[in-house]
Image (cartoon, rainbow, N blue to C red; front, side, top):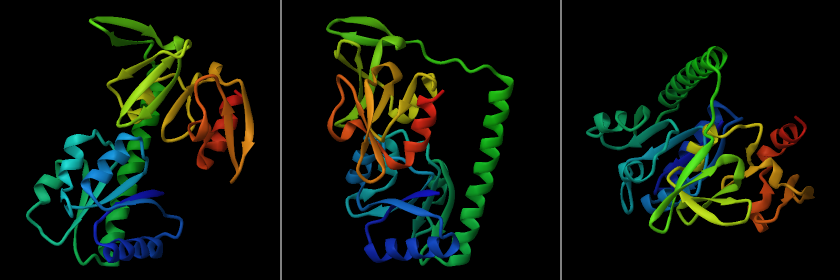
Length: 247
């Protein structure tokens, strides 16, 4: 399970991480953020996790501002020393609300609640996939000057999160902004054609010219319009990427 902690007090963040690992040593805290501004920027750039632990009071504001600015569909457990925010918390994709100081028993109950909800959601998704044929987005409407044009999905080379927005490049390299995050785009795109190689890039299979080894057990794709770190397949996606290429 991948977890992000948003907490401006270092000791509190470290204490929470220790408790999480005591409950489940397989848990991985992939990121820790200390401010509203830092968190918004990270989510706009496509940072991912299975679960968020979010302190309500941060140094530069109230953490609810994060969810007002960015569409985040990751389950949240709020942590705070105050109890007056419970109703607002449960309106913000929250599955629980823990009062500080956090005890291991309360934390364990929260994690069990998340796991139960997650299992039920996965079951529902599986049943939907079995009973309903999946349809994928086949075109994007984008603004070009004063005009709006239609671009077929098959003509798209890749999608990339950059400076807080997501753009796609067509087969000629011309780029257009889209009003979606990468997390929102993934289920819209045919997974036999598109693959998210890292937190910033979703690539069309025909755009890949070759694939090479990269340090730290990663891979790097060679394409016409993507280079540098953006072309690196993140380590946790390598196995899925190989399976995707071999379909």
